[in-house]
Structures are given as C-alpha cells and as structure tokens.
Image (cartoon, rainbow, N blue to C red; front, side):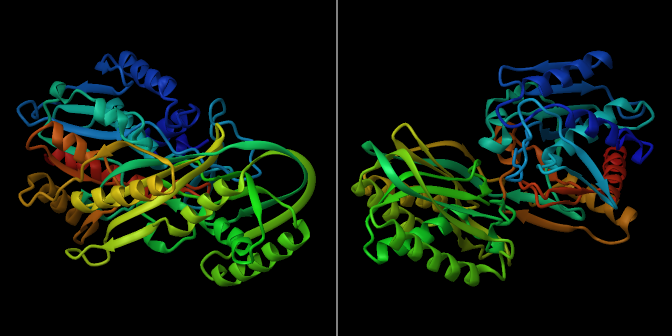
Length: 477
C-alpha cells in the first residue's frame, strides 16, 4: 500500500514489518525476519539469546579505513488500541492508512516508534549504490518495557566508534542526552468474598493519554487517578463501599486513557447519585485539556467477588497520596522535565491489586528518591514493593565529532542549524554508552506524533527528508 511513496525502499520495509505482530515480549517473528533478511542479502549477522539482531555490512570503496558506524533502534512497539477495536496484536497485521502527509494505523498504534529505525536500516543495507563506512545495524528487543534487549546485549562484538540512534520523534532535533529510569511495582493483597446484589460499574474513557516521557509535561490526566477522584466522593460522604475490581492502563510508560471499576455499596442509589455529581464536577474541571472525556456509571444486578472494607479504604488512601506526573523541572535546561513518574498500570489479579509505575530522571539521586517515595508509601499501606528494568541516563558529551559532522550536514541540507537538545524520555543510548567506552552518540528521527496512542501518525515528507539526511551523514563520516 505505501511502498511506492518514494523511490527508496524505506516505505516498502516499513509496510513489511507492519505485517508482523511485534509488541513488547513478542519478538520472535520480527527477530527471525531480520535474520532472514541478512541471509538473503549475504550479510553477516548475529541473533542472541535476547533475540537482539546485529547485521554487519562492509564499507564501500574509499571508506574501508573509516571508523565503523552503528545504526541502532528497537524492534518492539507499544500496542494500544481504541476501546471499540477488536485488533489482536498477537496475530494480526497493522492496518496501515495514508491520509495527506501522514501514515497511521486504523484504530491502533502505528509502531513508527521504532519501526522507522528498522525500515531505514534495511533500506540502507539493501542499497548497493550508497557510499558508507563499515556499518553495524543493532536492533534490540523490549525497549518499551525496560530495555531488556539493550541490557542483555554483548557489545564486545561491536567495533563502531559512532552510533546513530534512530528512536527520536522530531525532525530538526539532534538529541544528545536523555533521562534514566526504572519500573517500580506495588502489590496489595486482600481477602475477598462472593456477593450477590446491586453493583455499580464506573468507566472513564476518552482521555488523550500519551508517552510518559515525551508528553508527561502536557498536563494530561491519568485515567486511573481521575477515576479514584470520582470514587473519593463516596469516601467524603461516608458511603461504605467495596471494590470488586479496578483496572486502568496497560503499559507503565503510557499515560492511561481509560479506567474502570466495579464496586458494591449497600446504599447503591445514594452512591450512584454521589458518583454522578462528582463525575459532572470533574468533567467540567478538565474539559479544557481533555475535551473527549466520558464518565459513565451503570447499575446492575450481579454476583462478584468483593474485597473487604479495610482493603478498599487502604487502596483509596494510596491513590489519594501517590505522587504522579512531573516532579521537578531541570535547572540546567529551560523547559526540560528533570524528574517524573507515571502510574501506568492498575489491574486486579490474584486476590489483589497490582500497580506499576515508570520513573524517569536525569538525576540518579532523585530517581532513587522517587523510588523510595513509592516504596515507603506501598509498605506503609501494607503492600509489597518491587522494581525492575533500571537503566542509566545518557550524559551529554562536550567533545562530539559525530555531532559536529551531523550539524554541518544538516546546515547544508536544511539551510539552518538543528536544535541540540536533551529528552526526558528514556533511550537505549545510556545503556550502550555504558557498555562501550568512548562511544560517540546522537539520536535522530522523523516527525511522529501522539506515539503510544491509537492517534499515532508519521509524516511521509519528514521520513523522506530524514532518510536523505541520514545517508548523507554516513557519506561524510
């Protein structure tokens, strides 16, 4: 459908990988596809136990004595879809659409983050007319859920002095540092009993959501915490209720767009009226920044397992006290978020409620403090705490030959200077820089909007310009 958008093979390969289900944790098929590509093109490759793939291509004539260049991205994507969508991310291809200058997927995330890195890399490997130094293509797994692929990668096999990470989403910006992060979890266990009676289902939908790194500063509402505010009306009015379940969000690095709770209240009529009043108040309060918010309260006779009142009070107390969102702005770079956290997952499982946060900070010490905050709150409220997937910040390098060359090439192509920036989102650059001493890194990418949401879309003209820019950088390195 899109492979004929230009005379390179970038869109051809983007369409091919979009046919392959490749959500985080589901890497085998896309990893095998990359291996098959390498074999078909007689290129040396390595596939490791994490299912990372490295593909090597020799330098072209005149570049054999140049330092090797690493082109790096990740193969997994965030799988989010509209509420009404029946799309199965484990089995079905994405349904690509083109409208004007944009590519998007019908009712789901597009996977431009980071499918475009794969498409660029394969198009370069497939083009025998390009001039370039020795190339090392590094495509990692499970970046979106803790950077497990980059953490497990054996970088000793890499010879590159320069690395171009293709995991940014704004043309015209050269990223030179990023925040570090980790995932932290809280688990609350409670006794349940079966209850027959009138249950209330409270559902909240229509929020914008977004990437918890690049869009955390936009003051978008967190569906789980907003739902807890609706329920707080019952606490304030001393209306006794019990949770049967509460769900919100699917990924810790995505700001939740929907949330849902099922509760039992002896005074169901009074409870429903109180919830509807609070829902109206909140809808009016946030309508300016969340214009599509919808809060529904439905009443039905049913039978469910319910938690006891103590568990419900504990959970409501936790929601009322948990930090969330931007915690500190950078003192060094105007407008840059220094530290944030995002309650991305809330789900009822195994007679309890599981909560998962994504923590980010360019300051290791404050990242540790946020971890301590959540840990202390969880433990104080009687829960169990754990953490995983910690990755370091990528620190700015003052003496970067790669950055200087990329600036010069940008000025020639665009007639102006690029922006040199840091990003609050996490990139694999910090992990790989820690594995390979003196690695000179810059991150780039085309314009991709609303990543990690079903509204994700990628600019066709931007993809073309950035590809032209990338192959010229390789020519001049």
